[in-house]
Length: 97
Image 1: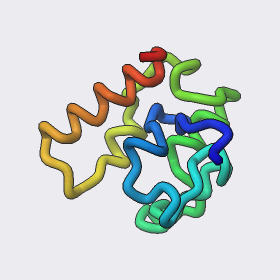
Image 2 (image 1 turned 180 degrees about the vertical axis):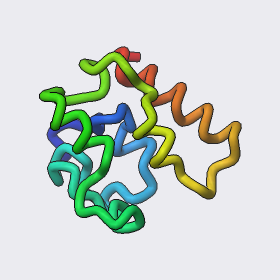
Image 3 (image 1 turned 90 degrees about the horizontal axis):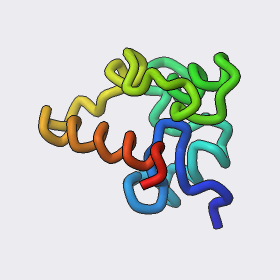
Image 4 (image 1 turned 90 degrees about the vertical axis):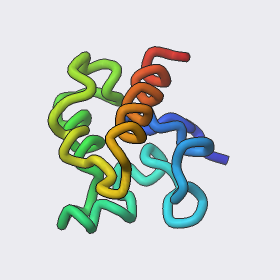
């Protein structure tokens, strides 16, 4: 079972992530080394890396979410409405509900 079901960016791994338990065991469990990072030519999630580089365990501690890194890692298949809903959901998760 995942120790922390909430990813650094506020994604609830078990409920919000299609890759969870298929390609990914969770952002925190993998220390940001998620499978989709290769699409950006990276080894680790840019959001995870950004938060850790600032000394934060999540974007909630930063206070700048959604930042440019979030915008730059938008799912290209998501509509504007889907992306806005995803951002709202992640922000709600980071606030604790």
